[in-house]
Image (cartoon, rainbow, N blue to C red):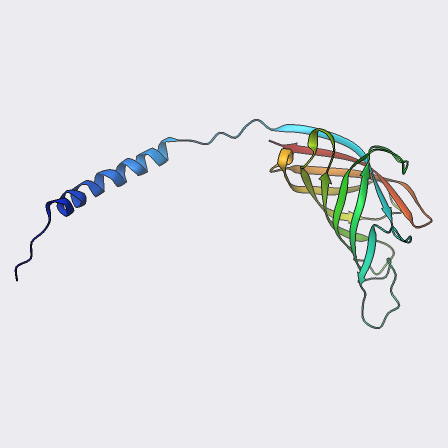
Length: 183
């Protein structure tokens, strides 16, 4: 039996190199230009309750063989803290601070945090900012890195500066300034 080639297959094989070169040329001719960067400064208050029935910070893991508290080395805390526009508990709710905190020092309360600020009100509703860094509640100011974001803060970077507003009676309030570079 003799082999016969179809004219359609032959035409397709002849056109394939031309279509590939056109695709490559098209892909190389478009350059991406990102939109201009913006700098946003936000000022708000981080409210944390850690000893009441409505606690927003919960101790979830402790070192074996210890009677651990929040300030015991190795303690792991999950947080769902409140972000408000003022230091009073009645101040307007603007979002949540959700993430993890680990007591990372043998000498005093020095906490490593990995937290998302989730904005639920106003211009930034639905947007987030990812924060990574260390907090020492008894030392002000505390600086942490902004390592990402979503929504209006997509591709965010920058830093936060926090000053302890109050730290007593199972309630911690941190005054925060966030300097966010984003598109």
